[in-house]
Structures are given as structure tokens and as C-alpha cells.
Image 1 (tube, rainbow, N blue to C red):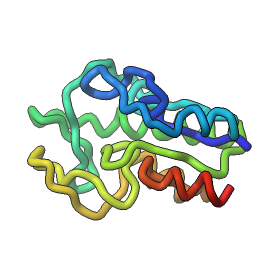
Image 2 (cartoon, rainbow, N blue to C red):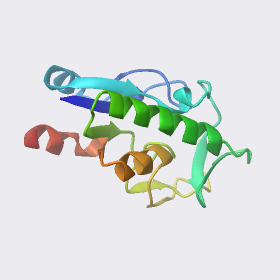
Image 3 (cartoon, rainbow, N blue to C red):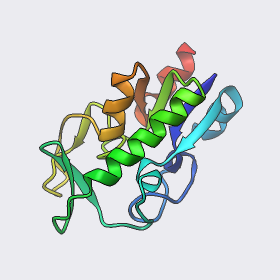
Image 4 (cartoon, rainbow, N blue to C red):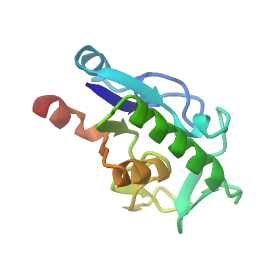
Length: 145
């Protein structure tokens, strides 16, 4: 089974800060599934490292106030294309991200406050029938699948 995964979760240094968020389950996931690593920000044309951004009122804004929504939307569309091409039914994405967060994201004030909501990519994938999970749900995913 093909599964989309945020590239940062398997050790790719593509986060806004230029590092990764390597997860301990990466090896087990790799051994059980065909992982399709994606970074919607990079696919949307952004650089690494890049200025931190958060989603607020449907837009993605950097800490200095630049609207970077178009990059996030472009990247989400590219990831959706890959998901369809590889017939992915599941995506494991980075929690709280303005792209990948599902169910909870930062509130757009850059104060570490978490609110209910989805990132641009997570929302698009779910609208297209792909089950989106955050990295904290991986152990449950491994047990069920």
C-alpha cells in the first residue's frame, strides 16, 4: 500500500528551520508500506530554510506579515496529484503545520497557541477522500493496518 508521508518525518531537512522531525516509527513504516515522501512547501516553490508561517483566516502568513498562501496552495495541489497518481488512501502528515496539520494548527499569532483546524494540504487531501493522520496517530495506524 502506498502512503503519503511528510518528508520531514522521515529525516529530510525540509522544515522551515532547515531541520527535520524524524519519527521513531520511520523504519517500521518503511518496512510495511511504500512511503511517498512529500513537502508541500518545497513543491509549492518555497525555500529551506524559510520564514515561519501560520494559517489564519484561511491564509498562510509569515511572521513578518507576508502572505504565502499561493505557495501552500500550489504545493498542496502538487501533493494531491502525487496522491492520485500513486493511488494513496492514507497520508501521515506533520501535526500543527499550516500545510500538513490535521485537527489542530497554530492560531496565526506565533505565540504557540493551538486551535482546531486543518492545514492547506490536509484539508485538500481530506476533501479528496484521503485519510489524513498526524504523527501522534502512527502507532494506531500500524496496529490497524
